[in-house]
Image (cartoon, rainbow, N blue to C red; front, side, top):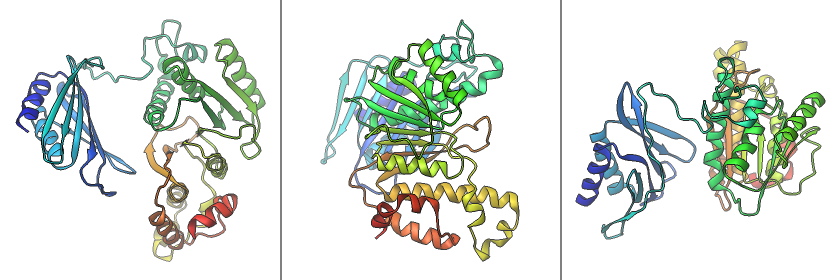
Length: 391
């Protein structure tokens, strides 16, 4: 490992590191992290490296001093991973470790630009403040010069947070034959336009995106904006989630404020389409409020405000469990509050063929029993598909 330590000292202590990924676990363990990503961050004027430990259903972060970071990377390569890629200003370095612990370092041309961290800790966004973006200008988030309006900065942050979620999803789905994407309950469609902008204008992918909503005036407005921007593969349709059947195959389903069981209806559609990716921010979960029961938890359930929060968490937990049973890898992530609801959990699900769901089934049965849940909408809508998976 001496050559690795020398390389890390040169890159990290000279603040040349841009990004790094450690992967290829030595021993698979569902309870342990399967990948670590590393990037520089500026905290109180001092550069540190932020380690993101990617588990199956969560990501944990840790910020380390530069010298500590070197030790952490060496330990991770020694104990957990067989390979690493370090992107630096002058070169990319691929570190490979054989079964006999032979270390090979391949030096290649740089593929990433150096990130310069400002002392005011300005956040780097996918869509930057100060760079004109056509749909944000048209929707009144930016002025003509690309400056984000102060009263719309929360919306700007929300759009970028959503795109961060999308960035993580795209490498995990097939994009070579084009993508069909449905946004159920699209509303004013800030995020729908953002999705189209990123996939088409930035990534140059072949996509068809349909936004669906029950408000005709909203649909008319969004179609007008799409036409003005020449977003030719983006269409908005008036209609209900449950009744939409225009596509035989959908690759990604987005639902960002479907109320109560409308979220479940969207998830059912997505699974039946065998969608490769699902991004859902539920809101207004009412169904479980009158259904959850557990005598031991009565001190919590006897208070309306606590019961409401609890029922929302139980609802989203069960939704994630159902998706796991039906073959999806699921993460519950923190989003940004929507304008009309404080709900800020995003369900991100990626289809995983051949996934073993025995543990998910066992958890589902015990979870329902613990909360006294029966006669659930999502079970009725999935019908035999879920019954067969649980057997």
